[in-house]
Image (cartoon, rainbow, N blue to C red):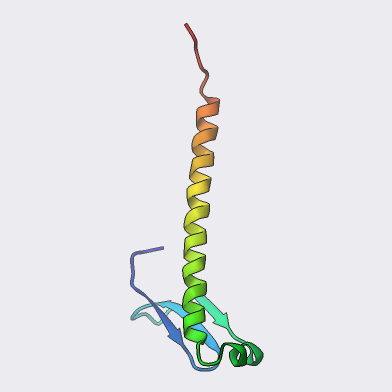
Length: 84
């Protein structure tokens, strides 16, 4: 993803979107709260959506780090070891 600024916008209808700031492009992410879930979280849909997005970013970073370590381990295992 580019280094563009992102914004989280509450559309007021139970939908929260993550989009690039200042662009008319479609949202990068949509979170849709049902009527039942909106009643459960009361007026905190935006805060819940922020927490969900943050958790997703953290999980992605961890998975990326894990994949990089696995690739490095595979490369190391493929290199023959010579003992003298």
